[in-house]
Image (tube, rainbow, N blue to C red; front, side, top):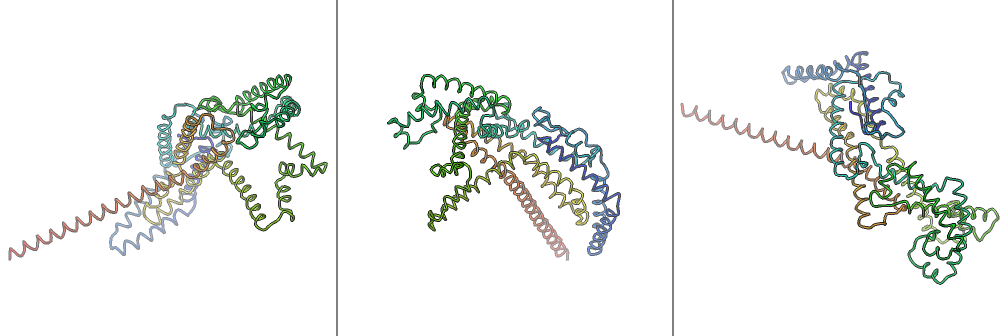
Length: 486
């Protein structure tokens, strides 16, 4: 049986199928619940037969009941080996295996209704084939949703986190901190005293990091040599970090026209310098140095900053309201961004896995409703919901590939414009589309079924009208014949 894209999704599908088999056995074979369902349906069918004066409703019900029972509850067997697409490609995270995840759930031997398992397997193969078809448009083999979903977003997120964490190598960290505290501060102080600094302050500019062209001319000969050495060490650190922690680094480091290596080096220096300033601010607060209070509080505690900003002597009604609104909106936006990022990029396998398990587990109750209502409408609705959930991977694959194409096109139009600081915005847009795409799929499926229903209704009405016209014409012809004979 073909599993889902990820081992987690495949394991939850197996659990759902096994739960479904246990429920079918429990309801229809091991308890009197199945007999009660049969008798209720039989009672409704008998009443309908009496009203219509025909045994057809009863025969229809008996055929429906035993047909559904035989098709979905009577024939079952082992699920067999279920392998996800990432396992086949050898890209499953932490070498996860569907078999191990299923074994960890203590299910024993997984069994499932055979027809249901085959139907779900066929739908999975169909959508996997659709994903494979659209993946042929990508020039990079690594960009394959079936083998590595959202690889670009995950790589960018790891780059962003690596910069935010700063340098973890303690020896290198000490070297960088020493250089920043000595040679960089001296060069920066010289530059701030120069006439060029006044022009730099009022313009759009990048932060004054140690490698900035404005700073480098002000290094002493020894400072310039120290800069070359420490910069080479940080570049080597970034290379090692990329090989160890960031997958498919050839794709991100230049493979799509973007070279984040220099940007990471710059950002690490800026991050370490910011950390150093935070330490100085904490020391200033501990000594009650009021001159550094504002900057220190903003660096350490937003609540301290809010208290200082909203002190009574700074209050005006309009100003306080505006400041408070801006503060809440800023933190609310950051919180929402983090929630969306963590839920979608980290949990999408569980989202589709839980949904599949839930829907498949509820399948026996779908049969009960079909039996009591004596039609297959509920089974059709269940099938549409299953198709919708199975289509999520296809929708997410489209989102994944579109984000890659956007990434390529944007950097072709504006080389070097995409920087590390744009990563959170890029990933947040991707996350929003991850949320939206299943909703779009639902509207497409619902719209298609509405269209098919409308066509069927129109054909039925047209056929009924034609039949009525034919009958009326036949009656008229028969009447004319009788009149002529008289």
